Length: 179
Image 1 (cartoon, helix red, strand yellow):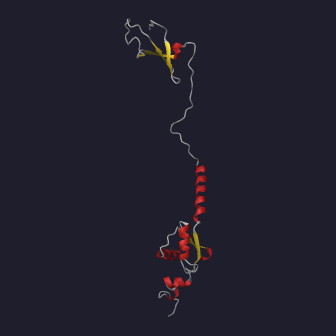
Image 2 (tube, rainbow, N blue to C red):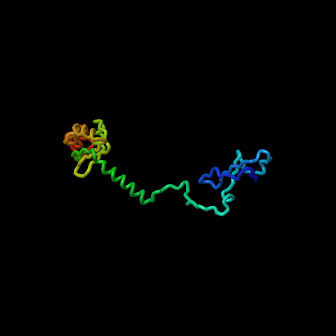
Image 3 (cartoon, one colour):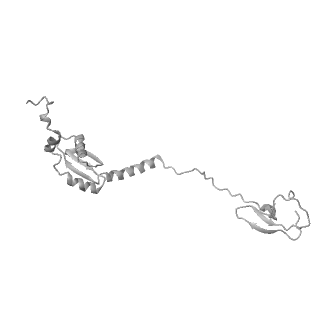
């Protein structure tokens, strides 16, 4: 490579590359073909740093290998603990809007649900627990207040059972009863 007017000037060096662009002021009268200078573009010659600075050796920087598709995955024990915690919170809030009424022993749970459906009472759950305590769970506080006024404390009594479902002792299919 021939430099006629002056020595090469270092023009641009990017921090991430190992190539320095050198301005080459070529003599206009000297014919140079492109195949003699393979890296000439727009009157700039690209040369590796190692050729310009032969005293220094290139530094090998090894970056740690980080796979692209690596995602943090929870262990099975961590997943179990997380689910138990979430379910404990749900269980704690399950009985926030309950109404508790005493039910006569004649009532079965299906009959209680039928009565609640006939009254158009929207509920989350309905259970008969020990000592014939009926637990009716609602979705909101407004539902709890509305249906608390509708269902008085003696709504599921023996009188209501006989009124809605009839007396089991007066059934014609009961052979123990003599008419």
